[in-house]
Length: 191
Image 1 (spheres, rainbow, N blue to C red):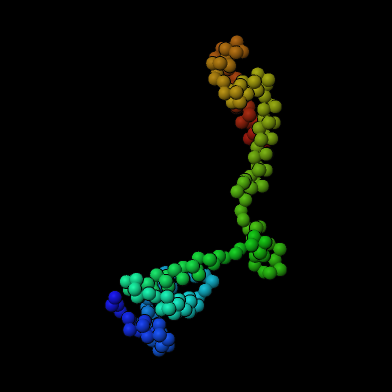
Image 2: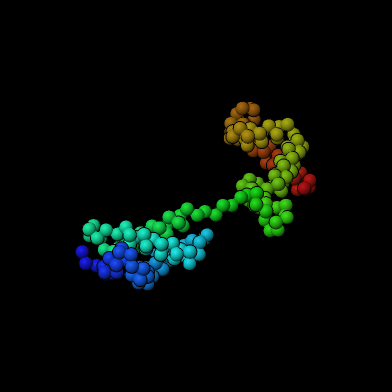
């Protein structure tokens, strides 16, 4: 099969170092293109170029003209996968025990991760509101407390509460309104 660089590849396979250098010069744009597709954090572009050049030399030795594959197509795949394998394996190892800032710092990476739950301030605020609500409920009359508990905690309607307690519907509504109004006044004055 005829292809570009055939005579150079044959000379390079025979051990001609000048032919290998000539092939490396001619495929430099291909190597640079492959490097741009394989970004590396741990290796710089010069190191990747050296790895690609080594792969070119191995590819010259491994190339089989009988398979009817153009040398440049064969080389392109070999370089690309060599660089991909090199960059795929690298990972930034990040320890959560690593100090942040100064080496002597007591603060670690784990300390900087935000907690997904509520903040301490939010918990304290909710506790205070809950305490104020309990105090406001305690200040109500027993009938008012009973109506609010049945309506809000048990989910009963005003009509059901009136039937259960043997009261008129309007009396239950008034009890609820007075209870909420008394609680509102207590909460505003207490906070």
